[in-house]
Length: 512
Ligand code: BG6
Image 1 (cartoon, rainbow, N blue to C red):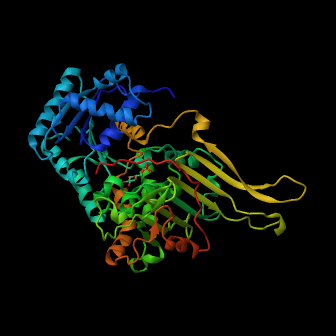
Image 2: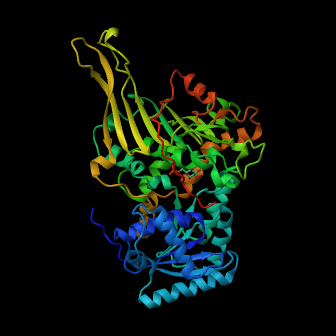
Image 3: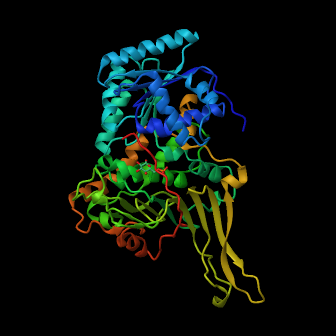
């Protein structure tokens, strides 16, 4: 596709500019967008951090990040020089220091003057969550949110740690900014295959008529990671898998699979339809949460020939931690389309492979005409939406095996993104940052969505907090989680679909 350069001048202000997320994700994504000519000519990046650094050191640090993490590989001096001319300032200030915000305001006005027109201002909070409240308050005091049409704030997850704190955070954000100025990032929504779910469902007539309880037996969503908590133990030990992954990424995938067709691709229309799904999720009764939710924590084990530590031995983790590194849920969406169709969700760290998939398991044919002897490993139809590492869609159906006798076995029809389009899909952050610049909030979470997702998991969080898991660690690293997760689905006469093994290891840096 031809880049349509966004022509309005823009300035991205990164709070936490010396941090990991800026270095690994934000600036490499901006650099790739720059190379692909998606950024406006009058584009600037301003860094804010409490670290002492001058502009040259700032540029040097970001270049190292770009050279390591850009999908375009190592930069050459000329291209880097062109990009670096847009890195215009680095402000060293404590985040509670009003002076820093005053300097920032001056800097932004000077840029506008220099350009002879007002820029879109993107305030990106790439800081630990504990600083968000302070920065938002200071931005309000410095009146940096005032230009409603041109100022946007980007907030990274986690959005609170339960329903109450998410509501408080939303109240604070909306006391300083209007909801339409707020872009809450869930990077899963920037992944091509996640977005492709909308195209697949609503740009094709084929599947929508059978996308309901009459034809679908159940849905499975798996987001499995090989990595442990690595250097993020301090953050993760206060979060756990339910907060870190289920409340946001898995819930968003669930919404895209279960939502009703939107009337248009207007941001609010899509977000309304997604909120409808979350509101229709059957509440999990706290006292019976064990029938619907399973938690696990990894012990030591062997992964790809290497010994890996138990979660409790990871840096930053309490030696008697009861934080879950694995969660599996069974949910129902109580509406006409999905009544009584189970949605099984699972996610965990230190699982055998890094793979994210959604499986739509269709019901068996209503009448089996073929004699039992013809069916080798007979399976009803299954649609596999592969989110990562391979991005694509597979449809499994029955075929006759070649030969003089009639024997049936399942085969797969595959669509692979890279083969079909001959390009590597952009990184999620590229898509999302460009959308913020364009003012398109479709792929961002609205306050009510965030709160509805917290409502779904809160009874489980409360039940888990009330009872200590006596059996932790209850799964060995490199296995598919605790036995209870198998029981959760087996008690319904079903089983988890085993994803393909993958050897890639990639870590998603976060703001913490
Ligand atoms: C983040 C979580 O949101 O997503 C991490 O905080 C997790 O714990 C990461 O590792 C996974 O992202 P991806 O894109 O690698 O699947």
